[in-house]
Image (cartoon, rainbow, N blue to C red; front, side, top):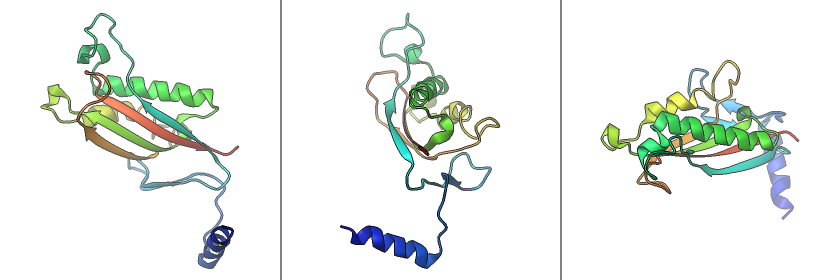
Length: 162
């Protein structure tokens, strides 16, 4: 079992890869997401389970789009929940290194996911003047989520030096 770490150390030395002291976000500066993120050894990692949108309209019938809002509104609500969970662990949205976004097709968009609406919410938390970091990310359309009317669910992984 000790052979693998030793081999990895030798490979790293052999290729001249510098040791990294901080998370590196790889990709073009103008891109909305990182092409990759590199987390150095020794960093703590927090895995945030998929978060769904909070209800915004208590008077709407349960499990309906009016109960949760459109994709942008749902994304903002989910991002706020994630931000609160990270804050409780001593992290920020700037520490997010990977994100998975699940979008349900919006009936108002002919059953297609509202990628633009999700990006409007996402862009308020990532790649801003105050928080320039952008995570690696995947966005996929799914058939449904845990409750009717939910259009977005997001999970993240965050890393920070102890």
